[in-house]
View 1 (cartoon, rainbow, N blue to C red):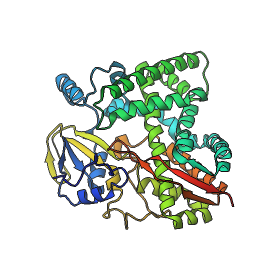
View 2: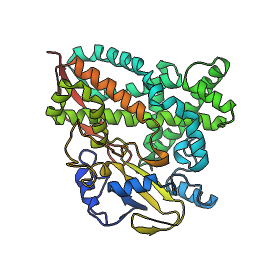
View 3: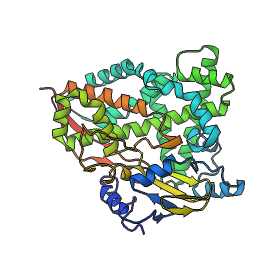
View 4: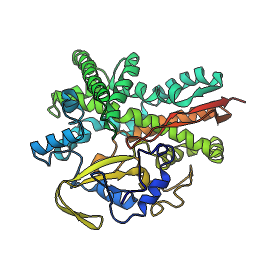
Length: 404
């Protein structure tokens, strides 16, 4: 029973919250397409945290895996299959843990804090150009460029390559949406992975000859220590951009949209900048960028009050869980000082988002600078929203700013 839940509806991206609220009233985990939907906080958290639940297809036979690939239109894509479908995000157990350990030292909060001066300098330069204009599109002119520059700096790529890498990421990640059947989208996704692979192979050769203090050099060291293969290295570096680019843009756009829709909260944040870290947490809770992830039951199990057969597929609706009144008082209220705020925007369990500290860093630096450099920020036109279940966030967010 999912008649009130239609992510393909024209206005779902703009306002999915009534559909999620309705879905949370449906008993159990209702069937939608071939997913058992988890919309309540307790159910989403239980499934995401349970190591018996898996993302990858290793639990199936070779024939079953190929059938799943064909059913999802993920077949006949050799580079996509090699570097995206087998990335750290899509595997489980010891191999997932091994790859995560190899890259984790670069994503600790203390290590990422060393990026703060770079992020601040880039943001200040962008605002030097944009604020005097008085009007600009927050997404196209600002947010769309920041994550690629920061992740490229982290990886060690040429800053001039960032726009191209972000386009490759968009072409690759967008193919995971439920509307990926068009042949041209499939061709773009495969081509993007191939070109990204070629660029990373060139960077690999450069860092192999001359190491630097960047992620590629560190990963080459991990490869030399036997922690991962060359293909795993390339796939992991790709995934870092794929996971951290689009979602960061969406989070920044939704965060500013929330502030614009709640001017009292924006005014409070201007007056109390020490609340910024809490405000960013609330932005992620209020409108998380990644709204849907799947899991398979890795074995026959009992969970969420029911028995499930091995191979059952679950859809975890993180955005719905973050608005569950059973977990958050007044969940539809945007409160920059909300505490505690143990949301699920970054997932939970073995696959919890590796880049969550980087995402928060970007948001804190950007909004601190934007509010400090302006006296007023207002909407300047209609907001266009992403559609479907792949991601949630504005495609376009025109604003006017004033410094006095």
